[in-house]
Length: 295
Image 1 (cartoon, one colour):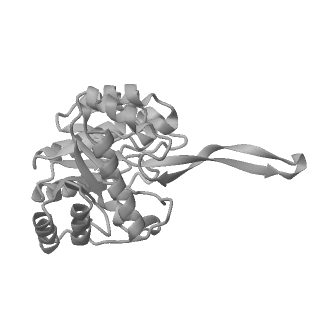
Image 2 (cartoon, helix red, strand yellow):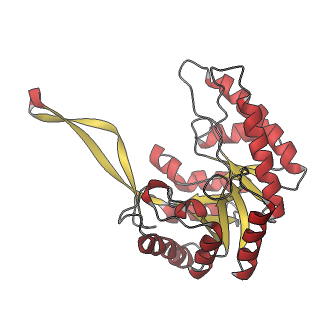
Image 3 (cartoon, helix red, strand yellow):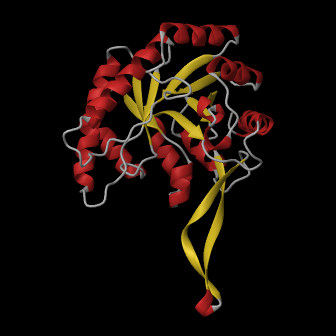
């Protein structure tokens, strides 16, 4: 597996230290990674800001630090909205097409996207149909520049493995693959080994982070007691220190034939805070864990 670091980890969200892309690429090399995944939004690589000069600066940084860019991370929600007169799907298709063009310029073979959140009062089948139709067009446009679309198991529609395989089958495009991650099935109670082995033949990228679960309670004064609340709060910790069974996950991926890109991300508040030294410690720990346990 090729080890990659996601630039969202150093994008300044959730109180994290912010680096621009050349500085992030340099950092990635220093931490021992082979590759980067670049966030396709501000402050990193939004199509609105992807001028020729900015693309050239990213290319120079990649070459200087002997790093490749394998993935551009797109951010999509393909749910229909109430404002039918607003062309939301067209906007997102154009956004992903723009990311695909940027990816092609950087020799990155993959653009990662999400499906859709469910909307109260709207049939899941209606959203499903919209997701399939929109991703088909995204794939067709990405194919023109030699880019694969990777659908990540993040949003509500297709979050379960069986759903996701059904959606992939309906999309029916050779350049549509999966970005299959462990944290969602782990939180929802799917068997990680079985899920990973089943999804591996369709997977080109996995994005990884580890978490602890913190039970929540609400005090009930009339009962002088506590009421259990669901779901638990989840907090990011160093890789291998959380509740996710990554040994089983990577064993399933490898037995299923996956040998793609394994990306580390810090996309939420992390234990120890967002200072650069703490982020560096998390990112370097992932490399060490993967070399000792997953290679």
